[in-house]
Length: 171
Image (tube, rainbow, N blue to C red):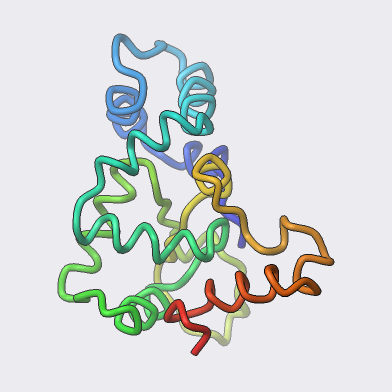
């Protein structure tokens, strides 16, 4: 499932949207929900604003953000996030709290399992997390699929793809 700002902001409560407005824009938020969502989407796509938010990340938040941005735009179940975090040396004891921090900052999204399609015979995997594509684009990090089909055919494209894989060394 692809993660987009429009979808993730639409699922947020009014109080969460006001908190995000305070954080990203400041001042008095628009009174109507559609205008509030549009203002946030516009601001959260701005590379300068995203750079300010990501520069303010510290320790575990910054490490987890870097880990998640490698798969930006994709929803990942908790077990995959945990496995990737452990493979990167991230202390997973506070992983859920750090994910919640990134979601509260608007830099990551939590997708409830009920919103993902799955056969009835498959058990509920729980929520998934990820970085919305627009946030990744604003940081300059684009998924490999957005770089064109020929990018893997170049040495630079292949090396970049390999380094983005789990563990950062392709292993």
